[in-house]
Image (cartoon, rainbow, N blue to C red; front, side):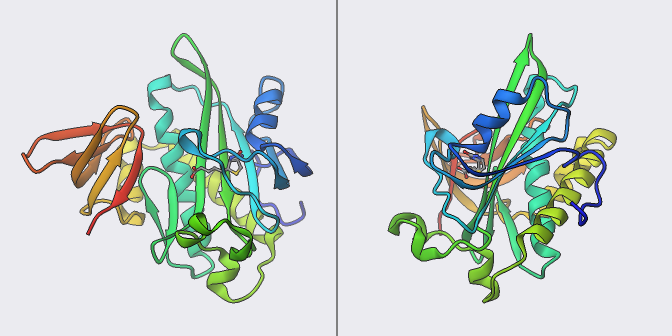
Length: 251
Ligand code: BTN
């Protein structure tokens, strides 16, 4: 706590040694909890990833959820995820780690995943009540603790830096970046945030294959819309906007 330089984000921090999923615990308390509350766990036994996947949450990682209560329409929630990606990337770059964002919300180092973000929202009549930003960072995770298929595409901060990092310091710097980005989110035009996101991302300009529950689209990623959707131009010069899906880089 002494390391914290924020006033909103992390105003309350609930630390647990083991949880099923910090997002589940956050959801249970979100109504009553003040905005900025953080749930953090040393381990999760049922960590969840996007699109119904499992999130391997070995010890040494940073598994946390942040409760936010922005007054925004439901359709703009994807924007909050982009903002979180910017914050994580900044926090990593502050340690001289060359991190990039892969749409929509993975943070990669040398093409390998170091962080995933799972945004969950509760809304009433199209207006957001609260947003839970679940952030998982392979901080000091030993790659040998990950299953083989996950390990192939993953890395951790300690693996990249060749030493174990001070997670308290890193979390303090991450909460600071989250607060800065949240302030920007509330005060600036979204287009400025998109520009910042594109600066930190390596997705725009790449050839991608995006899988959604009902289709697969291949083409060149050319931009981000007002809603945070990825814009893809396919081989027939047709334009597609994809709000959620699994993105892979091809060639
Ligand atoms: C993804 O890339 O699929 C998203 C992974 C999100 C993982 C974090 S860890 C903290 C929070 N609690 C969860 O169960 N998931 C998120």
